[in-house]
Amino acid sequence: MDIYYRKRAEEYEEIYYRDDPIRNEEQRIIVEAIKKAFNGMDVLEIACGTGYWTQFLSETAKSIVATDYVEEVMQIAKRKKYKCPVQFQKEDAYNLSFGNHSFDGILANLWFSHVPKVKIDTFLEGIQRVLKPGGIVFMADNNYVEGSGGELVRKEGEEDTYKRRFLKDGSEYMVLKNYYTLNELFDIFSRYDKGLKKKNIFYGKFFCYVIYRMKDS
Ligand SMILES: C[S@@+](CC[C@H](N)C(=O)[O-])C[C@H]1O[C@@H](n2cnc3c(N)ncnc32)[C@H](O)[C@@H]1O
Figure 1 (spheres, protein in one colour):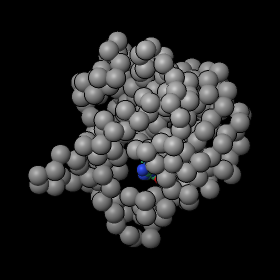
Figure 2 (cartoon, protein in one colour):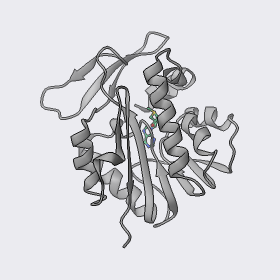
Figure 3 (cartoon, rainbow, N blue to C red):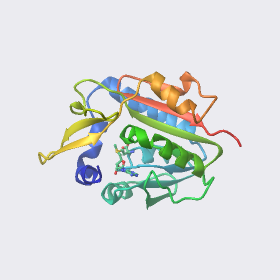
Figure 4 (cartoon, rainbow, N blue to C red):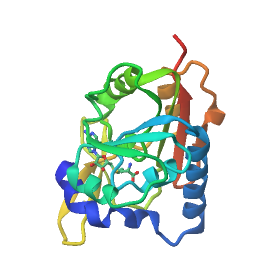
């Protein structure tokens, strides 16, 4: 997956500029939800990629530590302009280097779908550790739309699914990509926020997002 994102860095953001009014409207809904959720907060962004969402986040956040495992995508993110202080740092989403209770909020967009099912709890427990009690987690992701973003591939005996992707140079990759129903998202994230309601999950045609709060304890 690292090689894929290294090579895809320069063409990555094309996915956000497709000529589809529903898609564009859902992206706008996500942007507004991010700005509202993180107003005045110190935020950790996981898998920030080229900084597409970081820009919107910076409009209301107090500060951002934007992280990714791939340097090439962060180089693109560093070229952008932000409206609050943004520090970039290489981090592995499964093994965060930050101390306990370091952040008011965590943003991780279009990342959860790439987490192998067997690593979901490792990832969610890791972000829970670095979040302050009462902190907010926001994750937006893709919904499955037939014919969009390459062929969906199932491998026998595996619970994860994959997308067959081609880059402009013709190279082909199998990228782990899991899609979830609204009920599946609710079941997963209820384990981390007992007060989670289905209304905390936006489930559109192309995108979904979940927003949940770490319990105060
Ligand atoms: C689909 S992109 C999402 C980028 C950005 N959040 C967005 O929505 O535009 C997934 C990102 O995960 C990063 N990534 C892959 N493995 C990672 C890991 N173990 N820890 C942190 N980031 C990782 C990739 O480099 C890539 O930038």
